[in-house]
Image (cartoon, rainbow, N blue to C red):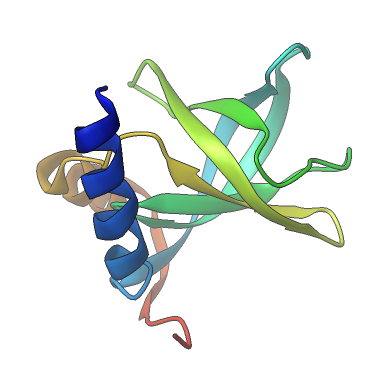
Length: 116
């Protein structure tokens, strides 16, 4: 990703922080840079990121990879960690088609908007 395109992504990702997030329950694997993968549960998903369970503390800015069922590892960056929950932004926006496919298989609680 070039500096110019990464700058555009950063702007788009911030705009998409208000995109609908779908509450769901997806078993997945999460791996922090330099660490071992561990089993997790993704609790919400949008085209720009996700939140998941993370027993070990993760730090904002840390690079990680999430592996969802049927997909390869997706790179993300930790945005926040609080009380064993981590919120991450994808390095590249998730395709709306891929997002909708995941949601249709794993929806559990509906769509909500974050308070932006």
